[in-house]
Length: 273
Image 1 (tube, one colour):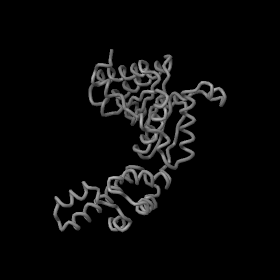
Image 2: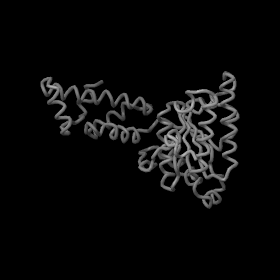
Image 3: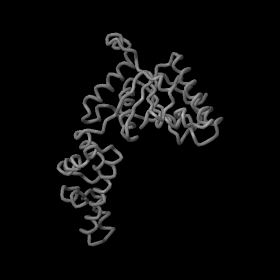
C-alpha cells in the first residue's frame, strides 16, 4: 500500500548498471565483497563455506564517499540476482519530528519485506542511531526505534542485506553494533582504482592515459572526494587553456568543447598544480 507514495518510490535506486566488475584494483576488498554477495544469495555456498549469510554489515571508511562507492558496487552485484536496492539517508528521514521519522522508517523497512530480495544502504548510520554517551533524549528514542524495527526485519522471512555506512564506529549505538554480522573496513583506493576512477571522472575532457597515471600517483592515500577535487582542478586547466586558445572568445571555446575538441594532457595537468 506504500508503493503509490512519492516518498516510498524515492527510496529505490537503480543500480542495474553497477557492479564489482566496474571497480578496478582493490583485489582483496572485491574478493571479500563478492563472498558477502554470494553468501546472501546462495544458501548452498553458505553451507559449503560454513558461514551464515551476512544480513547486517557495517562498512567503515574515513571518507563517506568511499564507503558509499563500494556499497553501491556490492548492491549492483546483487541487482544481477534480482535484488532491489533501497537507500536510507539522513536528509530524507531526519528533517521532521520523531513521529515523521517513525512513519518513514516503518514504511521503508516494510518495503524491504515487500520487495524481498532487497538490499538496503543506510548512509551515516551514526545519525540514525548515535552512540548512547552523547545522544539526546530524541536521539535515544530514534535509536531504540531503529534497532527494534531492524530486529523485527531480521525476524521476518525477508531475504535482505542491510549495509550501514559510517566513518567512526565510536559514534554508533552499541546495541546496533551488537547486531552486526561483520564489519568491513574500506581502505583508501589503490593506484589502479584511482587511475580508473580518474579516467572515468575526466572522460568529458578526454583525459590521456599519462595524465591519469600522473594524477593517480599524486593522489596516493586520497579518498574519492579528494580525488574529485583534483579532477576539478584539472578540468579547470583544460577550460582555461581552451579559452586562451580562442583568444578569450567564450562562444568559440564553448563550441570547441561541444565538438569534443578538448584533451586533458599531462602538460595541462602539471600546469594546474
